[in-house]
Image 1 (cartoon, helix red, strand yellow):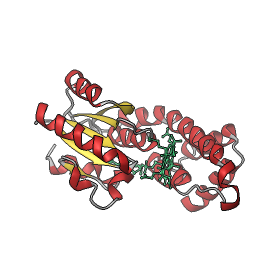
Image 2: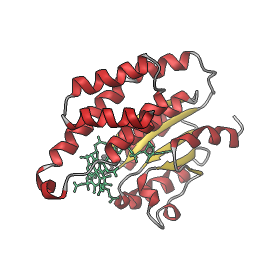
Image 3: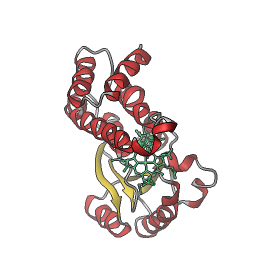
Length: 215
Ligand code: B12
């Protein structure tokens, strides 16, 4: 069924009609035909990761990818009240997570989704932003005092700065657990370069962290 919704959703996205795309998704949520998790993982994420320009128009279709990203970003932000409503019904865990993308990492849709998954898991989670310099990440940890820092890395070239950030975090805040995830870690050898406590291949594994750390 979600496959059918995905096809319908991407057909709307192909026309770059933001209003129609948003209405379509909100109707699915309101009529309880889709959960938030299904929306994020079965519609929004693949609508971006599977997007490609036809070979013959590769040079002139980057704007389409950017428009689509903007539409998905709007939809994602519009789901926040649904996240907060769900949180009213779940048992909270007294733990804080800080989600952040390292320096030069501008891909942030995944990080925002991850932040929402943490919130849905019942922990207090705060998304700091994309392209965050090492110094600002350290300053944010000092101020927020999270139990976990979750780093989202998409571009493989950002593994080098991620290594520096994770080393600095562990040196200054050894009690803070580091979670890493994102497409960059699918590259062979990427994970070995960073310091981490948990690597998650997908967001559905988030609950397992809190079970493992017996929260
Ligand atoms: C949208 C997009 C952009 C947008 C991002 C806008 C934004 N606000 O986020 C913009 C236009 C900025 C962009 C720029 C670039 N991009 Co780009 N982009 C994409 C695209 C099409 C979609 C990414 C996305 O949002 N996917 C949807 C999200 C939901 O998926 P996700 O990030 O993987 O997140 C999921 C999981 O990975 C996981 N996850 C993610 N983080 C974490 C963290 C934790 C802790 C956990 C548990 C899980 C987790 O959970 C999410 C949900 O399942 C991808 C194509 C692709 N294959 O993904 C290329 C892609 C990522 N981009 C790519 C490239 C090369 C670039 C540029 C270098 C292009 C250029 N020449 O300028 C720049 C680099 C910018 C930078 N320095 O970061 C390459 C990366 C290849 C690589 N080197 O590794 C890709 C794969 C395209 C390609 N096939 O070549 N891009």
